[in-house]
Length: 47
Image (cartoon, rainbow, N blue to C red; front, top):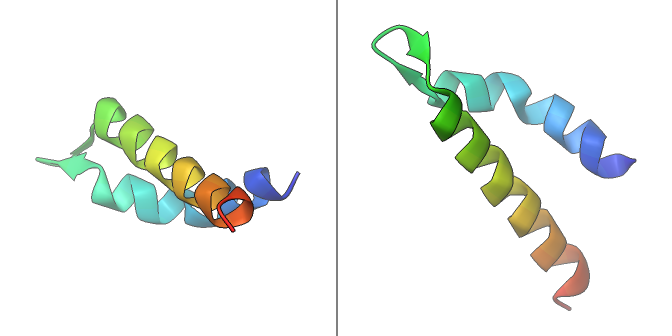
């Protein structure tokens, strides 16, 4: 599925943005992934 490809593409960026004091914050990472999926779905079906 293309959504999986997009998530795989941005996983490293999301992990970088989720860093807090040298550790990956799982809650922040999940929230960023959810916002990315939401934005993709709005783009695809919001037209």
